[in-house]
Structure formats: structure tokens, C-alpha cells
Length: 180
Image (tube, rainbow, N blue to C red; front, side, top):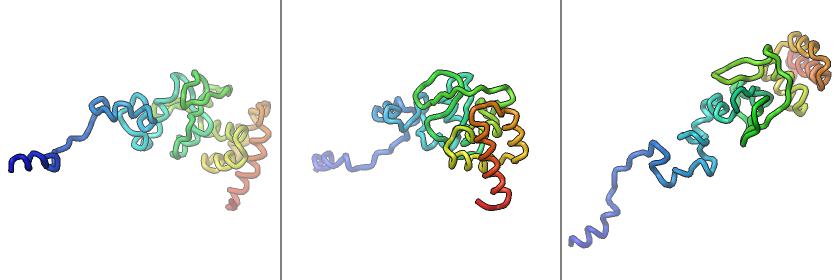
């Protein structure tokens, strides 16, 4: 009778403790390799998505400025696209660098990150992004047309500034009238 109990001992429930540190479990120790956990983190990516600033801060090189689609996402509290767009710093995995001339008035600090201002983000997307993306960014960032047009006019010599002005005239006029 004692032998039969020992044979079935594995069926009895055993209390299980949650794993709190990845190094404690050999299966989780290499979780960053499959991309489910960011390197240097002990939290899965889907939990980190709740704090996009912290997620982006892990990827951004020191003194780099977040720009374009990533800045748009952070300004509007949308999902952060990958790769992360930055000005300055070295190219690293998950980061795309851009050569944009930024002045101190074009940069703001939020949650410990340097990113382009809302108007500069809208301007760069209007100049450089595909028309549909740029139009949506102008609407999402909610910049008043007269102020945006003054910003564009001050930078008329920049490549793509005329495109930004035309897009502003089309998109911001139609959204002011209530049409899509």
C-alpha cells in the first residue's frame, strides 16, 4: 500500500511561489533573447506598454531627442511605434536616427525624456511623413492653424516647408469646418 502512495505522490498539489526575479528560473533567465522582456528589465513588454515614456527611455541614447512618429505617440498618449525615432546619439537596435537641425525652442523635456515640441513634431511629420500619416498627425497634435502657419513661414527655407504649408492649408482648414 505504501508503494502505491509513493507512485502517485506527484499528483498531490505543491504550493507554488511566483518568480520575482528572472535569474531565479532557468526558463525565464533567457526571456530577453526572444524579445518578450526588454533587456535590463524584469517586466514583460506588454506590462511596460502602460508607461511608454519608460519604455522609450530604455532605448534612447543619452542626450538624444525623440522625434517624428515616436514624439507624436508620446504627445498624444498613443502606442509607441518601433523603431524609436531620435535626433542625435548612436544608432542602436530599436532606434532610428535622423539628421534634423533642432534649436532649443524645438525641444521639451517630459518624464525625463527630451522630445521635440508638439509644433515641431507636427512640422517634421508634415514635411517628411507620407501624406496620410502627416495629415493625421496634424489633426491629432491639435495645433491651431495660424500658429502652425507662422512656425512654417519662419522656416520657409527648410526642405519640405512648402509641403507642410500646403498640407496645413488642406487639413487644418477642413478639420476647422468639421469635415474629415
